[in-house]
Image (tube, rainbow, N blue to C red):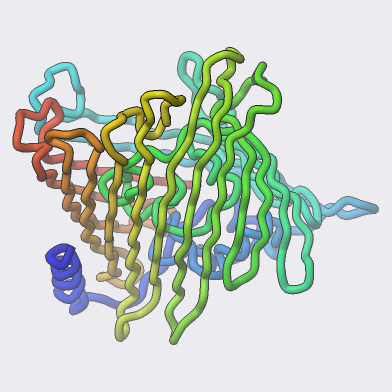
Length: 408
């Protein structure tokens, strides 16, 4: 771990000589509603949130300022339904031997993602966000949806959040950190190379209801959920549990945050007979601020998926019975060109819980460049090592992702 920390420090120190402050990109639907610049809510670049952005999201996307309202008795919504088109065009290359994998040959993934995002204010205390994807086969068109309903209680804000998502897990109900605790909120595109939570697969389809209490110094959330979306379940009353607590203090000009996530419970799947178990936890920390005149973000995660027991329902996060799956990661990102570019360096180590060839290390470098506030070029390259890679690997030990991201 010491070598990883030294490596991060070295690249950030070298990059520091090129830096002046920069802006960030944002989902234009919210920029239109609030009439605020993108860097009001974002740190470095989209989708990373600063303190103000966390407050806007935590209070259900209800803040307005850039648009007129249609108002009446028990009615207060923007005069325009705000929408954004989000696209990702990627080139993905691995150096593996498997000929049936397009990425081993080098694959254009165009679009890797294409979605229509609708979101914002529904009423004074109600907001929403909806991701409509260009679906294939049985993929649901409504990829993710939630409608936070909240009220102020003194200096705190309380919310009830009905939600459904095809990929983001129960943490989609309420999550504010940039550590990869939720799949879509991460520093670089190659999520499994930079976040322990993502490497362990602690997400997936989920639907349920979340309860959250938020203050600008931290938040607590609980969700009762089922690991499906887009359909009713026949196993009524079988819910899994998700708990999250995080502190978000401001210390000497630094925006700090850290917390715990926990997934648990046993229940039946949609057929009403198949049992499913969730048993995992994660710890994360982030620091965002300025080192001298240089904005710097540091993100640390640790995750643990408990081993399954032969006599009990298997843990779907770790079906092996030998030992727990674990992973830890650290990543630093620094802005280097005014309003345009960042560089990043990350290190991740994981243990898949098997008895042999079980450890993997991943070192990742990355860079972002803004063609416009809402159009970003990104490059990631990862090197994999550890005893997993002492044997022939079908997917190789190096991976490159080049991406053009746009939101408009």
